[in-house]
Length: 106
Image 1 (spheres, rainbow, N blue to C red):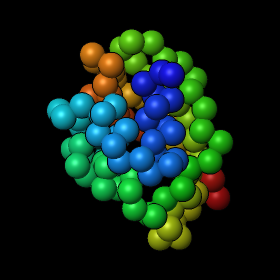
Image 2 (cartoon, helix red, strand yellow):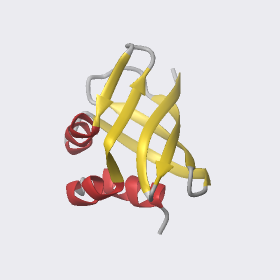
Image 3 (cartoon, one colour):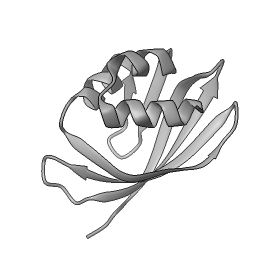
Image 4 (tube, rainbow, N blue to C red):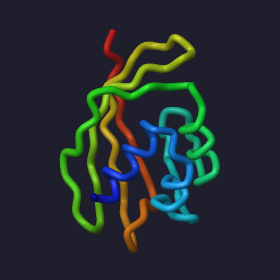
């Protein structure tokens, strides 16, 4: 199973152990719209919460250096659902960074 596939399954199943194993300790999630950077513990906490749901996830491309995936994301706070394209940089079999682009669906 690929790194991104393991990551997506862990998010879907709220599998904290797998997230800890597949995400690097140096992980950064760049949220450009808010000019924020999340670290590994932030990401895991967010994934373990009920603040969002993902549907129709699909991996567009993946090799040992990069993974690109697309999903539809709905947020518990009632904001507009989004189509999200994520780019994950991979080193030594772990995700070291993520950047996303999102389009509101409504």
